[in-house]
Length: 135
Image 1 (spheres, helix red, strand yellow):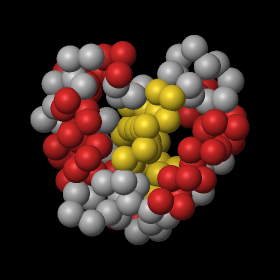
Image 2 (cartoon, one colour):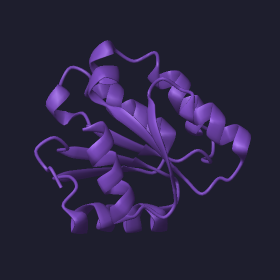
Image 3 (tube, one colour):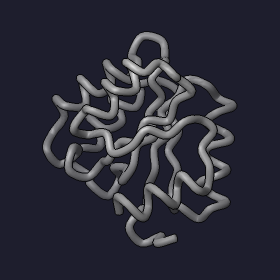
């Protein structure tokens, strides 16, 4: 896997077990050097806003869950669109969800900032696919 292009990945999921598993898979696959874990859409947006002037601290890829309390994946994407152009250019978004709701999936993949929909759990194969097709 080409490690030079993907330095930092952010996991945005309220499920600690899913975050732990996803982080381990990313580390074991050598997919990224850094993994930032945020357990809510709100804390992820706050991080992106806070670091928008420090592009080196921004993630190259964000794995976003759809179903989270308060700030779910849809609200996150709406708020993400309001962030600076630097953030939107640097950070690509992949949905990582267990949702099988066709309407939700369609809404997500039709968003201009979403590069892929991945069904949980994250796998080395899905990481390779993202790496090959989007980086």
